[in-house]
Amino acid sequence: MAAQAHIARPDPHTASDKEWGEYLFMRKNPKGVHFERWFHANGCRKWFHMARHTVSHEILAIYGITEPAPKLDGGEGTS
Ligand SMILES: [Zn+2]
Image (cartoon, rainbow, N blue to C red; front, side, top):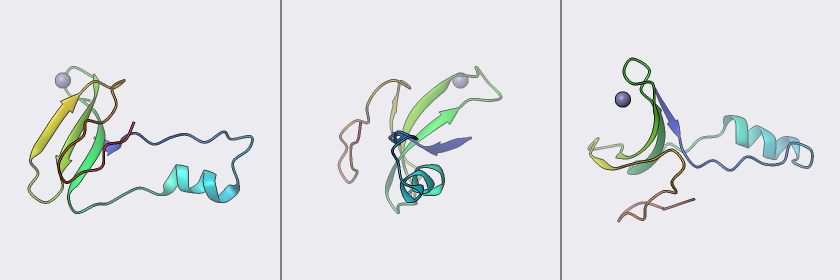
C-alpha cells in the first residue's frame, strides 16, 4: 500500500478546521512524479519512500522513511 509522502502535520491546537481537513483528506494526484510512502505489508514489513511517475510507473528513487524527497527533474522535491 502507498500514500502521499512528506505531508506536514499542522498543530491540531492552532490549525483551523479547513487546515486540519486538508491535512487529513486532501492528497495530490499528479500526472507525473509522485512522492509516496510505502509499507511492504506482505514482505519485510518495512516503510520506505518511493518517487514514482504516475503515467509511466517508472520508479525514479527509493529512499529511507526519514529522508527528505530527492530533487528530481519534473518533480517537486519537498522535505
Ligand atoms: Zn520489503
